[in-house]
Image 1 (cartoon, rainbow, N blue to C red):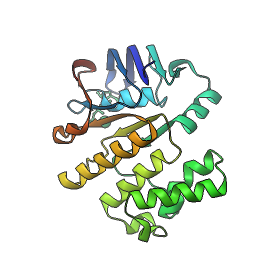
Image 2 (image 1 turned 180 degrees about the vertical axis):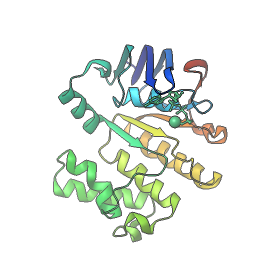
Image 3 (image 1 turned 90 degrees about the vertical axis):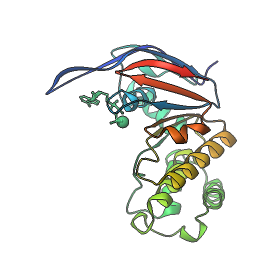
Image 4 (image 1 turned 90 degrees about the horizontal axis):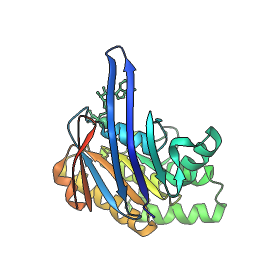
Length: 226
Ligand SMILES: Nc1ncnc2c1ncn2[C@@H]1O[C@H](COP(=O)(O)OP(=O)(O)OP(=O)(O)O)[C@@H](O)[C@H]1O
Ligand SMILES: [Mg+2]
């Protein structure tokens, strides 16, 4: 069973510009625990693909099966449970909750998923060590650098051990070296927890850590390199 299977997915947006076909008949399959990079020019459909897989957008047609669940046809309740239990998101600029400390941000998905107090504290502790930010446990997001923010964002995304980690340009606001560190952190933490990782990026250099590269062009898969 693949971790993520996408079959003939098409997604169109209607906007002020008229009809835009963001994804055209996209199919792919990722093994559980795999790490795939999605590359392609701006507007090629990378974010749309991640959003469809995470259930933030619904495809016009086609199927998306994640961890044996038909994401394209879940009802609102099943969808919110699927997202809460099984999906972690990392965005370009962290999107940390500004009024919560670093430790509280990491603990947020654990609280949502009703982990016990002790388990929460253990996981937060372990992650603070893994991301090297134990001294910043009580800092607020505005007190962090861009790289530190992204480390916290990665820790928060995987804290509840989701089966799927979706990262949309997680290194776009960082220098190459810091970006590389974030990708390694994502890969290592994801691997320990058996996450299937899908990362959209402009930066071809950081795709070296990925086991699969999916290239999109005008909403179509151009080439898969294994
Ligand atoms: N909510 C929306 N409404 C209308 N059009 C949209 C919407 N989201 C995306 N699009 C369009 O769909 C196409 C694909 O967009 P998408 O954001 O998936 O590209 P991308 O590869 O992530 O680009 P970037 O590298 O700039 O982030 C673009 O033409 C975009 O304008
Ligand atoms: Mg995008």
